[in-house]
Amino acid sequence: QVQLVESGGGLVQPGGSLRLSCTASESILSINAMGWYRQAPGNERELVAQITSSNITNYADSVKGRFTISRDNAKNTVYLLMNSLKPEDTAVYYCNAIYYRSKWYRDWGQGTQVTVSS
Image (tube, rainbow, N blue to C red):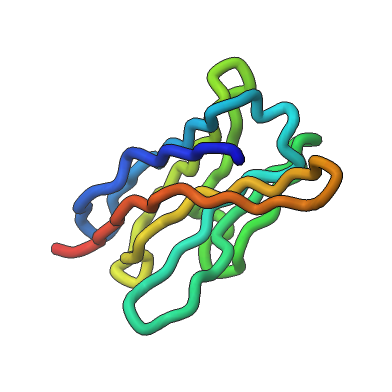
């Protein structure tokens, strides 16, 4: 199992920025894809952004042009830079790792709260 630790959440005003970090317990070069999901109260967990081991990225339509996912292989860390934040971005953000070790695995971090409010 890959341990994932998120950080960087907090309270920010509309229009502001935050950067989330997700650090894995092992080399992310061995992980097929890492992503950020979010879940707001009463809603299902949804994909926000994903990056593969080949650096192919994928974004939800609602965050395209505002959020950027990136990775630092040397630090085993994936980042989510969130700009132009809106109140509707308020949610718990979860880091996710998908990898294959004789079968597919999906591991989750504990989540970090992001609140966008004036």
